[in-house]
Image (tube, rainbow, N blue to C red):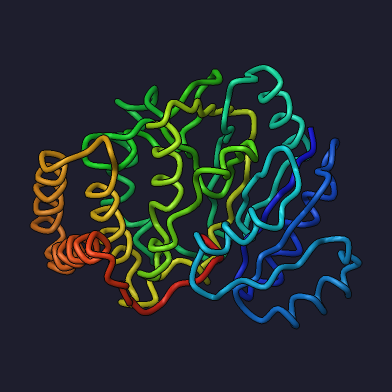
Amino acid sequence: MNLSVVITTYDRQDDLVECLRSLSSQFDPPEEVIVVDDGDVDTTQQRLSNEDLESVELVSGKGTGLPAARNAGIEAATGDVVAFVDDDVILPSNWTQELRRTYERFPEAAGVGGYVLNYSPDGINKANVESFRYRLLQGIRMAFLHDKVGEVSPIGILWAPHVFMTSTIRFVDTLQGCNMSFRAEVFESTRFDEWYGSTGSSACEELDFCTRLSANGHQLIYNPRMVAVHKRSIDGLNDERSGEPNYGNMANLTYFILSHPNMGLLNLLLFVSAVSVYTAISVDTGYLGAVKDGILAYRRSESETPVQIDGGDSSGQ
């Protein structure tokens, strides 16, 4: 099995080099490594040359966000399996081994992803990802929903994210964007929806892609031994439109619920109710504004009117 690894980046050369070093240290290295850069490609090229990483294929992105960068990587990839990792990810030396073994064990699997270990070396505790409300939600999930990793709830969010460790390999609805892979043949009919890069967040782009595969009968596998250490670089956390981490997330999630083939009006009503409760607790009406923007964006997309929302990069979070 030939493996292509696609890394999307946006002017984070230090993170990128560390990620590439972890790939070159694999027990069973990938046959192809592709970097899609939505930023200063010349600077990245020079840095790769200085670090003796010139064997990496560097592709210039369109500058329109993470989903478009992933699609550019798909176009460049030649492997039987295409894996996606973020530029601020470090991969243990057995990562490719676990990936290959999982595909061998499950020949019908269309995609394989793994456990994501988040940590914050840049002191991101000031961001929402480390807020009290966020930690409370994660604690509830850990206590009651740990056996639902990768399963999508009726309001579009995961019952339990891939940062929760499970003891066994399992079938899931979706994979985590910074640690996922797919057989190349799925891209013949399915690509990443580039609208999700238009809000400055890119949230839900992998959720949308994976659940469309699942809705078409494709199997997705979560292997907790396929670990990616995600540094969550502070450069990629804030929404460029609003300066807040959650605006694009809410708009994108609203758009996802409306566009998903297995969801409908009831799911939207449940989601809006949940957002309303969260808004009352947080005293932040911006969330409901983001939901409204997501609804308007979906209506425009249905009428094939281009949606223009400023911001976005291809580096992930």
